[in-house]
Amino acid sequence: MNNITLQVKGMSCQHCVNSIEGALKEIGAKGKVDLKNNSVDVSFDENQITIELIKETIEDQGYDTV
Image (cartoon, rainbow, N blue to C red; front, side, top):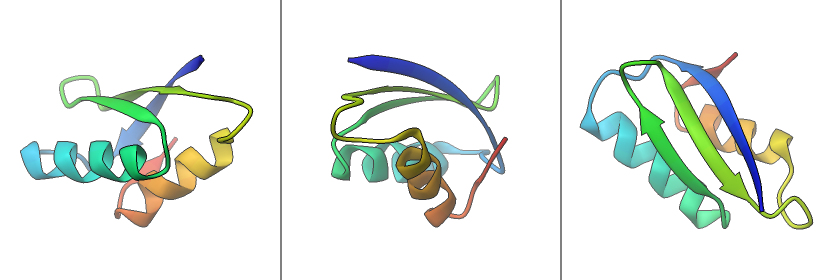
C-alpha cells in the first residue's frame, strides 16, 4: 500500500468529506479528509491505482487538487 497526502481546495463541510471519501472508495482507494488542513490522506495499491486517477476522481467531485 502506498500513502499520499494531497492538498485540496474547495472543501468546507461534511458533504465534501462524504463526497470525496465515497468517490475514492469506489475506485479502490481509502481517503481521509482533513477539512482543517484542506488535505486528503489517501492509501492505495500503486499496482492498481495511479496518483493521476486519484486526482481526477477528486476533481470530478468538484474540488481542485494542488
